[in-house]
Amino acid sequence: MEFFLQLLVNGVCVGLLYGISAMGFVMIFKASSVLNFAHGELLALGAFFFLSLVTWGKLPMAVSFLLTLAGCFVLGFLIEKFFLRPLIGEKLIFVIMLTVGLAAMFKGLILLIWGGNLHTYPDFLPPSLEIQLGAIYIAPVYSATLVISVIFLVLFGLFFKKSSQGIYMRSVADNQKAALSLGVHVRRVFALSWAIAAMVACMSGIVLGIINGVNVHDLSAIGLKVFPVVILGGLDSIGGAIIGGIIIGLLETFTGGYLSPSLRDVVPYIVLVFILMVKPYGLFGLVEIERV
Amino acid sequence: MGDILLQLNNISVVYSNVIQVLKGVSLTVERGNIVSLLGSNGAGKTTTLKAISGLLKPENGEVTDGDIICNGVNIQNQSPEFITRQGIIQVLEGRQPFKYLTIEENLRVGTATRPGKPYKQDMELVYHYFPALVQRRKALAGYCSGGELQMLVIGRALMAHPQLLMLDEPSLGLAPLVVQEIFRIIKKINEEHATTIVLVEQNANMALQVAHYGYVMENGKIVMEGTSKELSDNPDVKEFYLGMAASGIAKSYKDVKSYRRRKRWL
Image (cartoon, rainbow over the protein chains, first blue to last red):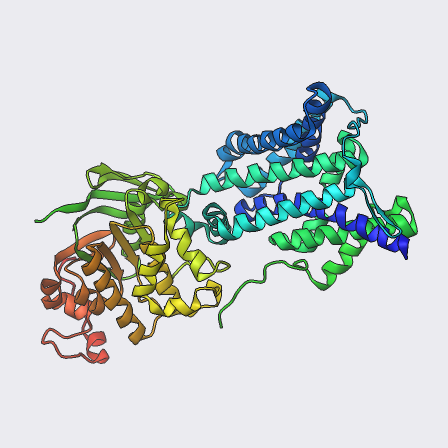
């Protein structure tokens, strides 16, 4: 029983992380229908930025964390401005191929600068984050993950529900022409969705780096996990991304715990296939509202 | 001639570099007036509105000739972001709500031209004009009726404080009573806020009742213009757009079919 609960807690924590990372992916897709194949590389880039700031820059953790987030936010903006914007109006497949190119470019850059070895962050999480609930032990990194994820979720919820900018972003995803007719700055919305997506991707990159160590191949592979997550949750549902993330996280940890660690990367995909056979639009994919 | 708000000088619009839709359209909109734009399908009414609001570009259209001047500013081929910030808001044909946003969020998108500014008062104003929206404010727009949606999209445009409001077929697919209600409110908005309105309509009868001035379009050209009174007294307009015989009595469909009078302006 303890083992089960332990896996449950770890699974939810990792899953939340996947979910938040997938949320960035969904945002780009919702706003501009672009599938971002460079998501995993963005994630890795965030982890390496943080690594440099911490080990070479010798900056305090909190400062490095915030700087990395800000840096990735700006990076997202720049990617949109220099790579995506010239392609507005072109066929979608060109844009998607461009993100594949971006992925290769970023991976190359990371290998060039940091090399392909496994790096680790210095141990910095305060031991007070350790939680011991009866027999369940939650390592500091998992409780930190939980806290950060919940903070991000609440912030994004408020942003999209309450703030004007958030509502403009949703309006573009909903009906781009109508948004244009009301003067919504659609290009700015695209840029903002890339910026936010890059930011959340790098955030999950940092946390995954703390859990698994920082290695470009591992991290970009984990980034690809957004695909099962978003397909499971429904490509255009932000809430679905979170829940899809948790499901994939749980499947992974349970498979790793009960079956075999080597199966943990495979089983989520198998379950995905079965779920899609029942719900082809994913669990929370938008069902077109039709008035009858 | 009073104070001129918007002027189109001999504009031509071409889609995809080959299809010419407008062939030299000129029209003038005076401040504070309601101007209606009549014509059959494909006459170029919607294209004229899109040329003004800058929404041609996403459809690969372009103003190739002539100029559009609003308040002394040249606005042809400008981006919609720029034009909406000049106070020109187009309400698209066929009601285009944000289906997955609530009524209230839909209205908030109307503030996009002035983000961060207070909007509560404007929202109250919209609810004042369209009381039917108040009880639906938390409902998703996708689940509202056609009449509610038409009110919503007009209200949403009002949130932007338009100087020039362009309505593209507000009566499309609505019950006659709802159409009357909407036109009554359009008139009221024009009177109370001095909002200049350009109205594109198939329902010529309703449009000429509220408008001060009207233009008739055909085949991408303006073929006739005049005050609403002049237009509704014109025998051709009567016959082709109001469904009346020259004498003013309703004409049977049989007669119209058997003898089609040549349109005099062609």
